[in-house]
Length: 199
Image (cartoon, rainbow, N blue to C red):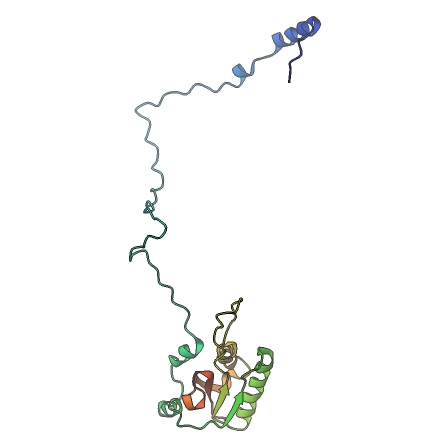
C-alpha cells in the first residue's frame, strides 16, 4: 500500500489539530516503580514443584514400583461361593456336595433376558406356594469368546443376572440361600436356590 502525500491545506489542518492534542505517552505513562528496599518482606513461597517424570524410551521396561496389575472383577458364581451361610450348615454341606435332590427345576438356557425374568419369578412363586425347599435354576454357562468376533459381546448374561433377580422383590424375601450347583446338577451353569419354610 502506497502512502498518499498530503496537500498543503491538509498538512496545515493536521498541524493545528496536533498542537491541541495531548500525547498518549504522557497521559497513560505508568507511575515510576520504586526499587524494592531491604525492609520489604520476601514474596510468599509458591506451591512445591512436582516430582520430575523419569525419562522413558519406547520399548523400555518399567520398574516394579511403576507396574500396576489389573485384576478383572470376580464372576458372580465365584462371589456366591464366599457368601455367608444363612441356612443349616449340615444341610448346606449336603446341598453343595449334590446329596440333595431339587424339588423342582427350571431351565432358562437359551432364553433372552425379557423371557427369562418373568419365567423365573413365576417359577419361584409357584415353588413357594407348593412348599418346596430347594429348587434348581439352570442358566447355562454362556458361550465362550469367539476369537473371530469383530465386536466384543457379554457372555453368560443369564448366569450373572439370575442371582440379582432372586434377591429382589417379589421373591427375595422367600429365598434363604443361593449357591452354584454341584457338577451333577449343572455346576457353574446352574444355581441351587434354597427357600424359606412357609409359616
